[in-house]
Structures are given as C-alpha cells and as structure tokens.
Figure 1 (tube, one colour):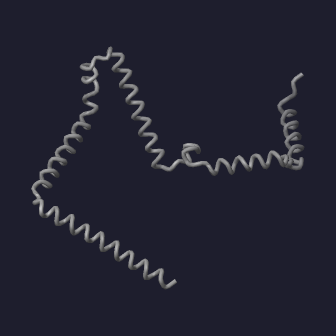
Figure 2 (spheres, rainbow, N blue to C red):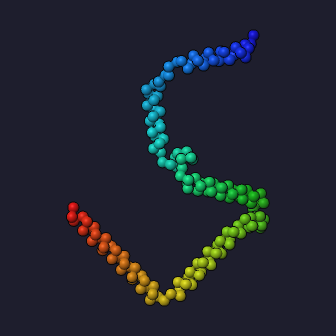
Amino acid sequence: MTPSPDQNEKLERLIHRTLRELPPRRAPHSLESRVMAELERRAALPWWRQSFMHWPVAARVAFIVTSAGIVKVVLMAVVWAMADFDTAQFTAAFSPQFAWLQSGLDLVATLFNAGGAIFHSIPPLWLYGTATVLAAMYAALFGIGAAAYRTLHSSR
C-alpha cells in the first residue's frame, strides 16, 4: 500500500522539522585541525599549483593561446599524415593560413634592413663620441650616487 502524496508531504515536513530541531554537531577536533591545516596548505601554494581560476589573467590568456596553438599544430600534423606526408599538398592546404606570417616577416626584414642602412650611414666618429659621452654620464651618475649615499649615511 503506497502512501498518498498528502501523507508524503506531512512525513517530509515532520522529518524536516525534527532534523532542524537537532543541535548542530561539532566536528571531531582531529578532523577540524586536519581540514584547517589542508586549507592553509592550499592557500600557501604558488599560483601555478592552484586551480586555473586563481591564476593571473595574463597567465590564463597565455595558457589558452598556447593550448590553441598546440591543438592547431597537432591538427596540421594529422592532416599532413593523412596526405601521406606530401609536402606539396601540405603547403597548398596551409599556405593561405600563414600568409599573414610571411607578410609580418617581410615587414620585420624591411625594418631591420632600413635600420642597418641608417646605422651604417652614421659616421664612426659620432658613434665613438656617443659611446664615450654615455660612459662618462654613467660614471658621473655612479659618482653622484656614491656621494649621496655617503652624505646620507655619514650623518646617522
């Protein structure tokens, strides 16, 4: 004989009221101290040993970007293996995806060549003079710092 839904609700309320009236039980002292010790141990862990949500934002972004790059490389390797390691098919399939990389490399090479041309157009005497002036300024800064240190710490 199954109880009616009304009887089930009454029984549920009775059990709920009885359980709420019970006093709260304290955890055993040994369990409490172990739990607190574990919480302190986890709080003292470095960020890379904690859960992902406790990582700094820059580390999370770098991890996601790196993971996406690794997935991309693995998928490309699988496609290359499925094409029987034919480099012509691999190049034809993936060259449009790396066109931006080639453009970036060309830009860097152009800037590097322009910088080299500018550097080579500067007379060597100017370069040596600039290096000498920078060395003298560094030595003066070191001397002023040493004098300031001596002045400030001699009065103590």
